[in-house]
Image (cartoon, rainbow, N blue to C red):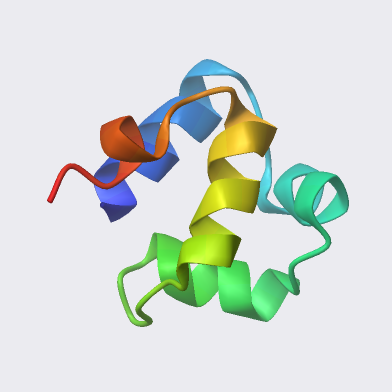
Length: 62
């Protein structure tokens, strides 16, 4: 999971601050999701997927 988010962010040149601004999710929570320290709620996953232009299935393929 974390690798896919990081990969998309890198490819699209999106920083955590950019993702925070696009989703309204706290940066500290985003950081924990991206590094795999936190599980992600479906509503949060939907916001992230929409913000980076990918499907939830792509970002979380389980």
